[in-house]
Image 1 (spheres, rainbow, N blue to C red):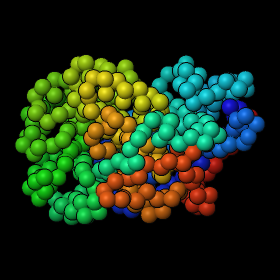
Image 2 (cartoon, rainbow, N blue to C red):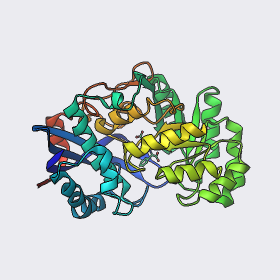
Image 3 (cartoon, rainbow, N blue to C red):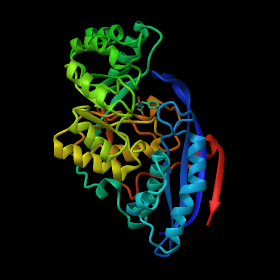
Amino acid sequence: MKVLEFAFHTVELPLVTSFTTSFSTQTERRVLILELTAEVDGALVIGWGECGALTEPVYLSEYLDGVLDVTTEHLLPRLVAASASDELTAESVAALLGRVVGHRMAKAAIEMAVLDAQLRAAGISFKSYLGVTRDRVPSGVSVGIQDSIPALLDTVDRYLSEGYQRIKLKIRPGWDIEPVRAVREAHPNVPLQVDANTAYTLADAEHLSQLDAFDLLLIEQPLGAEDMRQHALLARRMRTRMCLDESVVSVASAEDAIAWGAAAIINIKPSRVGGYLEARRIHDVALAHGTPVWCGGMLETGIGRAANAALAGMPGFTITGDISASGRFYKHDITDPFELVDGHILIPDVPGLAAQPRRQRLAESTLSTMRIAF
Ligand code: NPG
């Protein structure tokens, strides 16, 4: 594949309701969308990528402006050098960019655009590329921190009536035991889990153990991203199964988490781990160890949502993921929306990762575009 142009669209989509986690409140999602124009076997092809980074470095260290900088200054030059000799494939991107330390969300977005272009050119869907046989995946929803417990119960009721099959509650100190108790009492049989996004320390072990009373599927990332050992210690003090998100950024860290008992379950977010190919490798390793995985979300537009749905069709994804309908976050997405069908999201089966975004919607939502031609 020969790279002809990269366009970086900074898109902003208002959220249908604000989304509060232990680290921020979002009222809109500003997201970087990559549009790659390439030549494959003499034909022009477009590939789309989406970057998981937020505007601020509050989830992981990457953030949108930083992604743009490292991509244009350090990643693209390496990619384009290989593309000139026609050696560029999605499978070679990680190695080509490997000399640049970290910056996995930036690398993931590039690999995604190259993979999309490659599959479109070959007429292969991401679903077939991954060998996925399922047509749909069950859909879970992530419920942000609310102003009050009655508001939380209303929100959960609404999502359940829409058909969501699993509820994930965001927690933080001051919003944990009582909200979870209230939801569990209102819905004794609903699959329920919690996510702290690193908001606690090991000194909170006894407090967090109170969550064991609520028959949760899992507790996600209670401690710091680098606190792998502490997660293993906490896991021994809780009955609720430990799931890691921020701490798992690669196959190596997934293997450590499993071997050390820090994670009984892994949340795989392709953007966090450097792309869909590393995500697949983590899936394979987890499956070999009998560790269940599920697919997390970064409030993706339809571009990332489609690819996540295909990934989540792989056999090790035995836990319902955060792949909601587009309408959970956006009134108007930049792609055709994903709807809930009987509590499921259908896995697209078109060439590439998904249908192309709608040009008109993309233009309406774009704050700025930077084009780099080669
Ligand atoms: O459904 O896309 C989604 C969002 C799921 O809760 C979700 N994501 O930590 O997993 C997370 C969380 C998140 C929210 C991450 C905001 C980053 C920003």
